[in-house]
Image 1: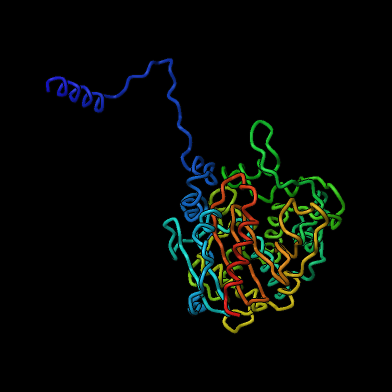
Image 2 (image 1 turned 180 degrees about the horizontal axis):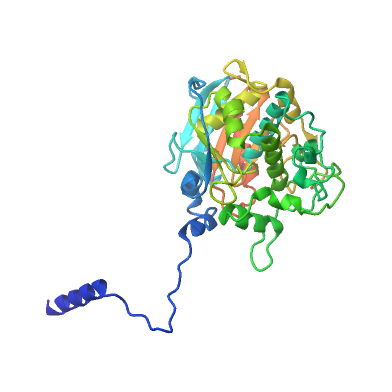
Length: 399
């Protein structure tokens, strides 16, 4: 007992007494905890949590909902494939929604997620940005998607984006010398540098490098998936409309869509002045991603109202097939910031890093939204496994 008392007394003194530091021994400054959180955003084991809590990690820009939500009615509950639970776990599912014939027939929240959580879309945001381009065309703010991007963003004259049209950006055919390759370390790739400086450290804007990047091939000559292209698209919309992307999206898409909750964009650049990350940064509830998919399925209509022109939805979801290996192993074709993932007639998808999908299947009048937490790097075969699951779910729906 005396020993325990002595130890307790020593601990008390150690706790209360200031630590002495030698004069020649500098106090180490700890890492910035916010920067550390951002650096570990994609880490296995915690990404399931991080992907629904981005507002606590990053700068954000709110996309306000309107007064009236588009009611999503409940249908008869669909029978899932017998191995659904194992499939959902094997494909790292956080949440899943199935809308068939305009009604919710299945909804599943896993890993302690909830209907109120707002999930990161990653590159599903690219499909949203393309919709905003279509609305800007409808509004007369963009005269033609065959206009050069420098008409709307003069800062891009004279560089790699000189002579690149908005259509080229929509199709990922800008021809600039950008590789979607995140090599960190002593000699980081350009994509890694942009990620660290714009998203993690907020020292620059994602699209800033577009002013100095070189040209690799002639615009339009080849498909090259590049988030920088979509960052430039967001810049074009912002410049053409004279509005911040979040404000324009709220007024022209999110409120007319009848979203049930505010969404938000992650922002780049210095606090308060950064630009919305139009290529990967949108966050919303599962059901609101479902509303987006249902609007696309309905050729631009939401709750009976034409929100996006039918002609634009047709253009956006008309796929250009890939040559062999052109898509880096993903998909069979690409439209305007929208993927053809399989050979299902007319099917298309918004796709995001780590397993985010809005899968639209017109032949069965179905939308599937899957929000996931794939490890990084992505496990081999997990997208094929995901698509097999989608096909099995659709096969079990009433004809």
